[in-house]
Length: 166
Length: 287
Image (tube, rainbow over all chains, first blue to last red; front, top):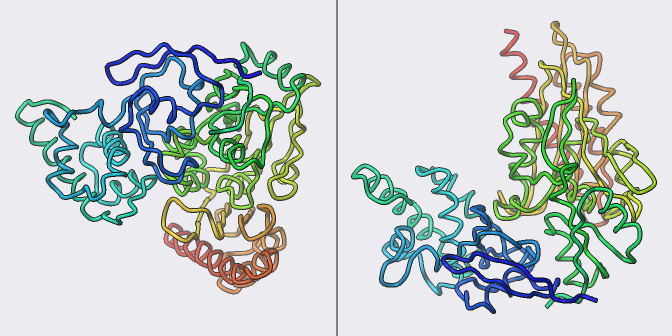
């Protein structure tokens, strides 16, 4: 039983055609493919460290079997920007001091990306709601909310000047 | 690592039902937010998971006459973004806003929430006051069961192992009816309910309550209606002494676990608050 199943995953700019065991979670599969910016936290859908965009929607990748994601487009934190060219959200997190140990940050950035795609000018309540599935064990929530607000502010001004969208 | 199991993706509903019926220890999977946790812990030991959430028969929210049919594979996020649910079933919309967190809501389904039947399932009290029915299918045929009969004991339902939940069906309440939902947990969000309460009241033009439904979750082994409290309200205006009696009766109908007797007081407070709010707004509207 449980022969490998061939699937296709579009992860950031890469396309992977791979064989996976049915029991492999999307989280483990992504990490084995080298996408180690997707963090393995609780593996029971509590912490959000493994959050990715699955066809544009933020999900816990530990709660998705890789076979269930066959054909999907997946965006991870590292797909948004690089050290040399960080994404607007990543730069805002760094500038706001929203990164302490950094373990929750990729998931927080992904949840923020999903929020700002839908709602570019969120209230603080909407920010806290959107990040409700992401835990920060350093408890640096205040700065993380500040980081999201800063990203939204920069997004608004870049849109006014015709700059890049979020 | 999760234990080994097969993964089967059916071509159709009939194919799915046949797979569930003929494959030993096969479990349907949609969002997987309960099931994969149980598989990881060993509480559930499947030999195969059968993908069902994508099947046409389990997808979408549609109006059929005076009823709304919600496909079992509808995610909580889809419930939240559906304008028909928000405008016509506000009590279910409100329950969905309290459900887990944004990441889980993108995967968890209404069918899965009922199939799992955790005592604290947030959609259950809302669907109970909406008098929901659960539509089931198997190779043996289809059947429809009232939700209150479907939910039998904690984490148990009347669903047979070869049955699949297709949809949840509710009657749209009258336009004047008022539905409310309130949840108490350890946090404001991303938590399991300690107690949640749903109410749905309808009034005639004289302000007499003509239909009353009150349900509570997490305060008993399974979510349940408080029929004595409902009877207290029907046929009367929503006066303070009626509210107090209905709140007492709802609290008495709660059967919390030993050590959690405080939940009866919480139920009483929550019902009082919800009914007080409705009474005040009703008075404003008529006044």
